[in-house]
Amino acid sequence: MAVSAKLVSKAQEHVDSGAFFTELAELVRYPTVSDHPAGRIAIKAYLDDALTPALTALGCEVTTFPNPDPAGGHFLIGTRIESPELPTVLCYGHADVVDGHEGRWSGRDPWTLTADGERWYGRGSADNKGQHLINLTALRLLLAEQGSLGFNLKFLFETGEEIGSPGLAEFVAARWQALNADVLIASDGPRLDAATPTVFLGARGSVRIALDVDLRPDAYHSGNWGGVLRNPATTLAGAIACLVDGHGRIQVPGLLPLELPDSVREALAEIRIGRTPGDPTPDEGWGDTGLTVAERLYGWNTLEVLSLGAADIDRPVNAIPGRARAMLQLRYVAGTDVAGLADTVKKHLAAQGFSMVDVTAEGSFRASRTPVEDPWVGWAKGVLDEVSDRPVAILPSFGGGLPNHVFTDILGLPTLWLPHSYPGCLQHAPDEHLLAPIAREGLVLATALFHALGRRGKEA
Image 1 (tube, rainbow, N blue to C red):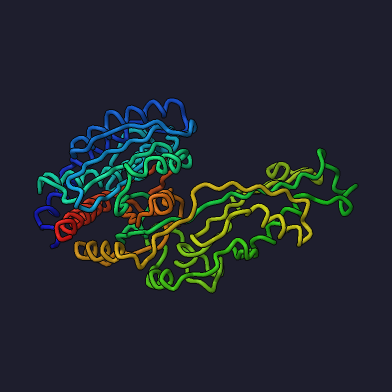
Image 2: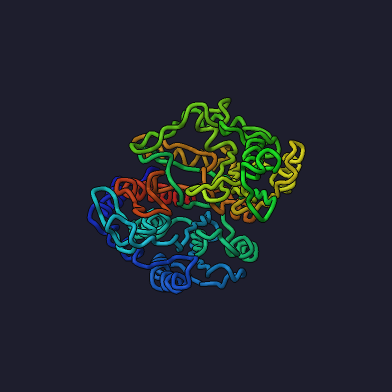
């Protein structure tokens, strides 16, 4: 049974009336920066004064838990059990944001939600306060309309996603019974583009690879010593080219997945990249040209040079530098073996004559994805296609990083991410914004999905 026109109208009116904007403005005003001491105070207030009342209004029992990792902040769980016989959904959001970059917002205050046409500017408006507010609002509208949800609800909020989710995996493993569910429905990250409703099923993982060529403490005159002293910058450039060539193609088999599954290839067959005005145009000839642009972005690995330097690039002197360094990043999909990645890179470089390059690697979020053929995926697409005026895109993996592996690998859940933002939202930068049309459509889509889950429970 499709969501009623009345409920759809209420969702649209909630945005059109300005009520949603007012609620989001209240959330944005909390400077919940997770890597700053003052931000930790704001985070605690956000949990106590904003999220706890929102979950209590949904009939949830709410508990705040300490983090087993001192580097991270508190966790909050809200639970509403209507019947053991009903399906249970786990929702997720993160209360923290990145630095506000005050003074760099085109005259705006990052902690004051400001409307400029269809853009609502404010830190956290897109990542992640606007997104979890949409889902909380959808649940509230459904409960007000029906008097019940028709399913059991568990909502997990963390407070350190922007600093790598310290303690989340350990916390979820210890509390798995309290968080056990049938499916995860959550919102973070961007859609495919501003115009395309999207569901993604997982996330690429990320490993930073530091290369350091530290040959000598001093720099030596290039006229007196050039040609007889190894140049660390030249060495570093050659080492990088052994890992990823000048056209973005990875040269180390151990840094690639074993295959691109047919189900992933089929899901991405009709996906087009860079269609929103203002998006960059994908460069021809960059990356593995045996793959489509969508396959390269959502189904394959990429090795990017994030930073590269030797000596003073702005004021060079005629001397061979003593040291050169670079930071690379491997974005990788599920199916890639990253155990012992630093050793893999070291062995490859040594075989090419670059044993003098020191290699260290540090991972963050791990790659994971729900199989495209999982029944929950087909169910969600069917529900959302019915209420949307255009087909919903299914992406096997989100291009960036999220703690999706905590839900797939520890809790064993199928994961459905319904993002309410778009790639040009400027998250993590000055002028972060949420698009009003996406908020409006997102609230309809989330309401429809939760409504259908309630119907699913009654039909079970």
